[in-house]
Image (cartoon, rainbow, N blue to C red; front, side, top):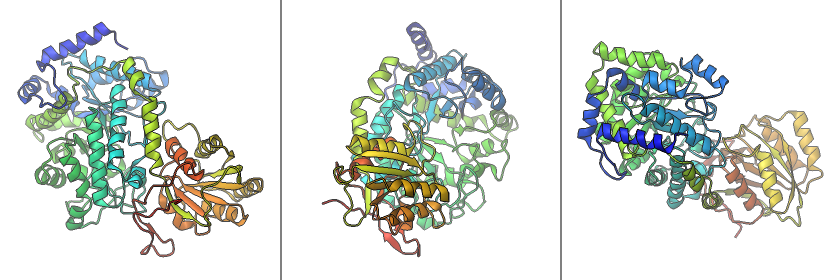
Length: 598
C-alpha cells in the first residue's frame, strides 16, 4: 500500500493539474475544467480512457508468476501497472477468476496500487475500478465481505426499503475497498422461465415491481458514493439464449417493450443512474438492421439518449461475449460501439486489437476526436462526481470499519428472512421440530459456489440446521445424480427422520426429479429447497413440502434453514409465475403466491 506521503503527494498533484479542487459527490463537476483537461490529452490517452479492462493478479505491481504469464498471454503486459502505462486505460474490472479479490484488505491494496500507477503517469488520471457484485449467484467479492440476497430473492421480499438497504451496505463496502462502479442492479424483466442467463438475477416478471426495486437499489448504491449500473439495455429478460455463447433475439413489439422492458430503465434514469450497460441482443422492433443493441445507433442514441433523455455513462457488456462478436470482428466491434453511442468499452478479448482499431478509426476519419471527447466528458464527470480526482485512495482502517461488520451481516440475515417462499406444505409438514425429527439428511445439487460461500450448499444447509438443534448430515448428489448416487441417497434416508433436498433447475428429464420421487417413496418426510429458479416445484408433484430460496449462497440457505425449523415465518411471495409442467400455458402458482405457517 502506498505511504501516506505518497498518497497525499499524488492526490495533490492531480488536484493541482486539473484545478478541480474538492468536488462533492452531490455537486456538479466543472465541465469547463474537464473540457480543458480533455483538450490537453493525446489521442492514445483519449482512446485508453474509453476502455475498462481485466488484468490478472492480486497486486498492481507484483502479481504471482501464473498471473504474470496470463497477462503476457492475453494482454501483452506483465502487471496492472504496465497495462495502465501502455494503454492509458480509464477503468479496470475485478474478477474472482483473475485473482483480484482474495480478501477485502488485499483488494484495497490492489485498488491503491492501481491508482498510484495511474496517477504517476504524465496525465495523472485516476482509474474507475468496477466489478459485478449483484449478490445472489453473481458475486466477485466474497466473505468476509457482506453477502446479500440476490435480485429475485429481494423481489420475493418485495420491500423497496430492503433493496435500498442492500444497495447502501454493498455500496459502502465496495467503496471501502476502492471499487467505485458496480455493474448492478439488473433491470431486466424476467418473463421467460427458460432464460438461461438472467433468471434469478432479475427482480421478477412484473415491470412496475422490478422498476421500484431497481430505483431503490440505485438510490442505495449511489447514496454510498458508488456508481450503480442498470443492465442490460434495452432488456434481456425474454431470451432463451445466453449472450455469452450465442446471439439472442427479442421478438417483442415496440409496444410491449414500452410497457415491459423499458419501465425499469426509465425508473433508473429518473433515480439518477450513473451508468447503463448494453445488451448483446438483437431487437428487430427497435432496430431491424440485425446488429446487436451494443452496436445499434437507433437503440443507444435514438432511444436511450434522445427518447429517454439519458446523458450518463453507457458501458458495453463484455466485448468478449459471443453475442457481440457474431456479426463483426474484434477490430470493428469497439469502433461500431462508439459510433452507436457507447462511452466505455468493457473487457475486449484482445485489447491491443481493439485499442489500435479505435486509434485508426480516428486517424482515418471514421470517428472524430470530438466524438471521443463526448464520451470522455461523461466518464470524467463520473470520476469527478465519485471524488476520484481528490480522494482516489482508500485506507486499511476504512476496510476494517466497514467491510463485513456485524451490523451489515445481521441486516443481510434480516433481509434474507423476508425472502424465503413456501410453495407446498402438505400436512402441514413444516415447520420441522428437532424433537420429532432430530436426524436430518441433506442431499442435493452442489453447483459451483458464488464467491464467498463457505462450502457446498448441502454442507452449508446441514450446518445451519445443526446449529438450530438438529443433527444434519450432508450428502452431495449433484445436478444430474446417477442411479447409483440415487440409491445411496435412498439408503442413507433410512436412518434419517426427515430429508431435505436441494434442487437446481429441475427439468422433466433431469435425474434430480427421480431422486426426489424415490426419496418421497421411502415414506420419510421430504422437503425440497429450490436453490436457484423457483420453477423446480412444477416438476415435483409428489414432494410434500417445497421452498424457494432463489440462490445457494450462505445467507439465503441460512434463512431457509430458519424457516424449515420454524424460527421465522416464510414471508416471501413469488415475483414470477410458475407454469404447469404438463401445460406451460397454464399457471400453477401466480405472482404473489406464498404460504405461511399462520
